[in-house]
Amino acid sequence: MSKSVVHIENASIGFSPDEPLIKNLNLEINQGEIVAIAGPSGIGKTTLLRTIAGLVPMLEGEMTLFGRNSKASRGELGYIPQRLGLIRHASVYHNVLMGALTSTAGVWFPFSFEARRRTLESIDAMGISEKKRTPIRLLSGGQQRRVATARTLAQQPSIILADEFLGELDEETMESVLSKVTNYVRTNNATLIVVEHDISRAKRMADHLLILDDGQLNPFVDQPISMQISMRLDKELNV
Image (cartoon, rainbow, N blue to C red; front, side, top):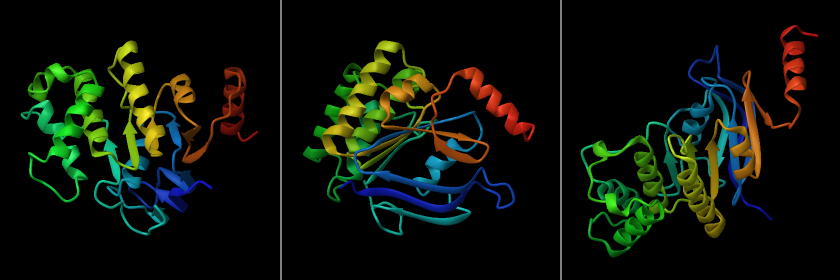
């Protein structure tokens, strides 16, 4: 039986109680699942990820992670934000090492063998080994995204939250990065929750695709675009 890792019940998500971005949210995500969230820009997808990460408090409702009414323990949850959060003056190696040290048995000494192993393996998996001594500020946008992904893989979390983490990557690199991340999830029975604007890519990578629109998060229904437009017009006209 699958173990629930994210459980959200009767929740409102956003910043203003009078205008929540997401209303009446009930969400259950199990261990080992890949869940993609798509929808129009600016309607709360990133805020939902940040809420799960414990960075934005819920307006109302309840959330449990790993069956606990508390934030994830150190190292359990890895987050790849849209703005990446990298240390721009530091090297690729240093940035990825920070991820490895997050969950290395309480060790913050930079020469921990386990942390170094995770760091180098993750950098290699992202195909940027030749850049490991390069400062972040000298990398392209796509290379920086690979560094942020390597940092999270080095952490070895049980849940990965990824916000448009495949942006700025060419098709070949995107396929390689996606393959490495999904392989990590499958091999470690981890969970991936990803915000993805490309519906076809989201359908291909995810076990479950959810659409956020008009404050509601619902399963994706694969319908002809003409039918989707008709349904939207009916809804707007209250037909």
